[in-house]
Image (cartoon, rainbow, N blue to C red; front, side, top):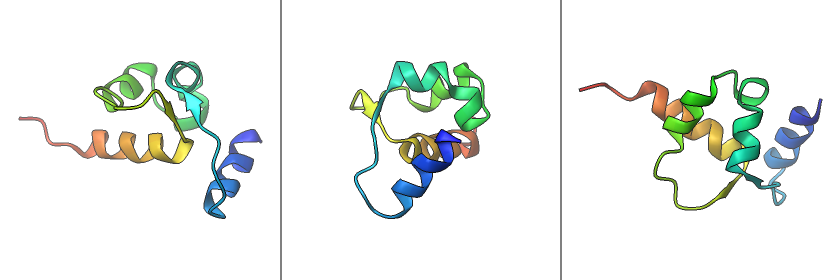
Length: 69
């Protein structure tokens, strides 16, 4: 329920809440349907320490689509 409210507020263009990476990792499965390891890989080398749910979802999608060399 809280996830939907967060996504709706982000879609409206309002200032979306930012969460610490550790908090997002603790709820990786509920928010992003991925394991914590996937989230850690997607966020590896991230510049800041707080992110919106949308930012993390985009990074996870990019990470999952990346070609392995």
